[in-house]
Length: 528
Image (cartoon, rainbow, N blue to C red; front, side):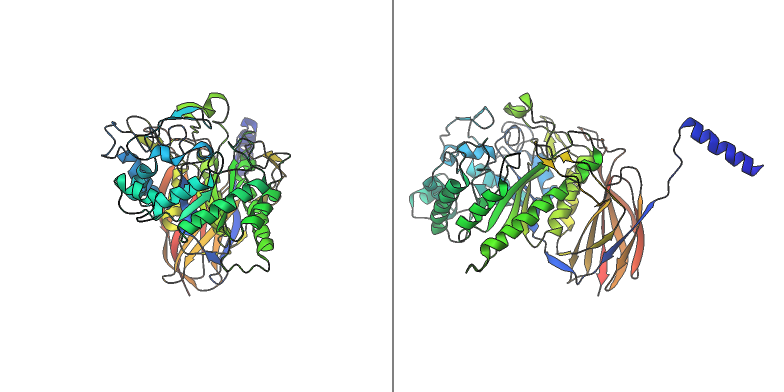
């Protein structure tokens, strides 16, 4: 009788088209503290402020607003940025910088200019000194980009003099006249933005850019030898472009002057294919490996003692707000993010940790309103879905990156678009579990970051210490939501970080089940 009832129940389920529950898939993660990649540079938790849309005006800077402080800076934005944990902020662009003249934005008389990159009037009421006030209030490192488009190499040198020289020469004294007696000591300077792109004002060939950047670098370092210079690497991967030719020429010509080469990548989901989309950060790692090889080739036999690193100083999800009016004016690039976007950002950060030996800076583009984790209106702000995985990494994933062994179920993608007209070949054996780990040898603190890319199934995973033993409970933080398209909004938080019950872990292994479409961070101890 019971058997007959069971058969009838199964028949009813199948007849109604209902899915029977599936058991969790199985995986293993092996942690070995001796398998070291390199120290994780805190600068991979950077972001970007450009004079674009409402990033500056109506974002971080809104004089006259009841939410603004005495310097016109939004207090709620300041607090959200501090909580985000951003370590370095790139400024002032972006495409904007290739027609930006920094002298228009300092002193008592500001010069309004037509911003030819984003087609708005730039009042220049926010400039170098206002940005540095913002930097000091959020506790981040400043990173300036000079104009290698319409600007001159002498103008770049003057900016270093204005910001970094204490007294004596004209522009150092001009800063003092403007009310800022002490130099800022800005360490990081980029030699232009995306100069390989035909869309860039003052676009140059690789050879011409390298010559101009080399001479600017000489002037800038002669003014302040302590600065670190970042060359504009490849950003154009469209059909017909030759990004590695650009990178090779730039590295060859500038190898004696630069400290980083900057790469850019934006990804999207224009075909609404979830599994293709959540695999897109792997393309960043593929490009990283190629440029790492170019750096090694160029430096082979060189007398240079310091290495050249990679700075992914623009990356994000961007594909919705990129046509028509969404590309222009004061409401430009106001992308709204969902859960699958947050998983992609977690994937990028996992990738930067796995490439910790060569990737020493990264900047999520951008910080507020414009393809950003923070979104404002006149009354307040909300934190977009991508805010939460970034915050967990920036707060906790500090130490030494470990080479983690992952045995996970896999899937194959199709050939797909990244989001900016760039096609990539299909990817095979993409693991559902995307994992990184960071270890602090001094105190035994272990941080394990796991994205479960599976849309529908949890994955039960055995975590194994190949050397040493797990000690004490592991804290568990999870970023998830009701479905992959869930978004946040003003007063509505469908996707956020949730503290889950601690996991007992005393010994060489423990088990955890990672929910579908989730990012999980486990924090505990591994004793040697």
